[in-house]
Length: 181
Image (tube, rainbow, N blue to C red; front, side, top):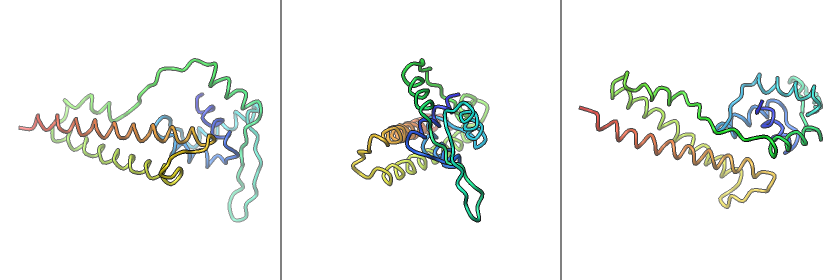
C-alpha cells in the first residue's frame, strides 16, 4: 500500500503520466522502494476510483494518448494523514545479494571473490550515476527548492547507501583474501 503514498507524494510536485511516475521509481526511488510498471498503473486506477487522483487525457498524434494524473484535495489530505499520523514501520533490507553472501560457505573463496567484485562494480556505477544525477539536477551548491527537497534528500541517501555498500564490499574482499591458500 505504500506505493500509493509514494505516487501521491510525487504528484504533489505537479501532474505526471504513469510512465513518468514509473521512471521516477527507477531513477530516484531505487534506493528505498521498487515498483513494477503494472503496480503503478493498478494503484493509479485504484486511487482514481477513490477520488485521490484525477487525470486528463492528452491526445498525441503518432503516439498513444497519455493520461496526466493530478492529486486531488482528498489525495493531499490522505497523504498528509499517512505522513503525520500513521506509525512508521522499522526499515527492512531486502537484498538478494546478501542472501547469497549468507551462503558463501557453499562456494569457493574464488567464486565468492568473483561475485563480490561484480557487486562492487555495480555499486560504484550506482554511486557515480546518482552523483551525476544529483549534480545535473541541483548543481554543485546543492541547495534545492523546498519543492525538490524530498528528491534531493532521498538521492543523497542513495549516494550514502551506495558509498557504504562500496566500503563494505572492499572490506569483505580484504577479509576473503585472507582465506586464499
